[in-house]
Image (tube, rainbow, N blue to C red; front, side, top):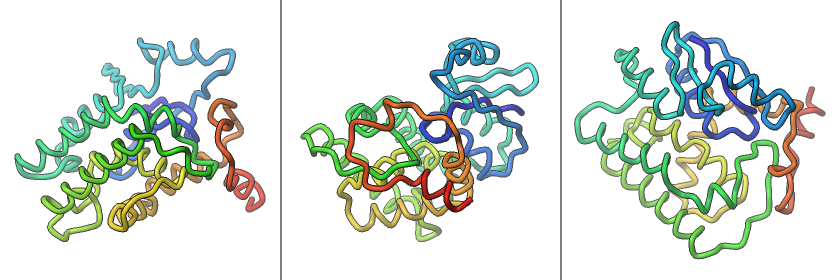
Length: 231
C-alpha cells in the first residue's frame, strides 16, 4: 500500500489515515508532496483524481478522502479492530468521526494546524468557544459511556475515532485553548501515542514552510528551531 500525503507539519487530513496505518501496524510506503510548490498540483494529480491529498493506492484500488481511506482499511483488515466493538460503540464512533469531517469550521479556520509552533491563545469568540464546548462534551461522553476504564482514549483503546480527532488535539495544545482537566488528560494521551510522536518528529524535520500557517498569531515557542538545534 502506498499513502500519498501533504506536509506533516500542517496537514491534518493526511495525519488521520497515516496514524491509523501506523498505530495498527499496517505495512505501507509513503510519499510526501509539499503544498504550494510549483509542481505540487501536477505531482498530486499523478495519484489523486481530485487534486487533493491524502490518497491511498493499494493495487488497483485508489482511495481519496481521509475517512474513506480509514473505512477502506477497516474493511480490508477487519482483524485489526480499527473501530470499537459493539453496535452502539461502533455507531457512536462513526457518528463523531463524521461530525469531525464536516464540522468545527471556526476552530479549523482560526487555529490552523502547525506542529512547529506554539501560539498565544486567539480571541475567544462565541463560535470558537462553542466548538470547544462541543468537542469537550463529545469526548467526555464517549469516554464515560464506552471506555470502561480500559484505557485513556475515547473508547478505551486507540481507534480510528481518536485518529480523526488527533489534529483537534494538536490545535487545542498549539493555541493553548482553555479546556477542562479531563480533556487535557485525553489530549496528553494522544500526544504521547507512539504513532503521533513519530509523525511529529518527521514534521519538525521538514524543510518546507507555508507563510499562511506561520503568521497571524503571536509565536510563543518555535519547536522547529528547537528540533534543528537538537540535531
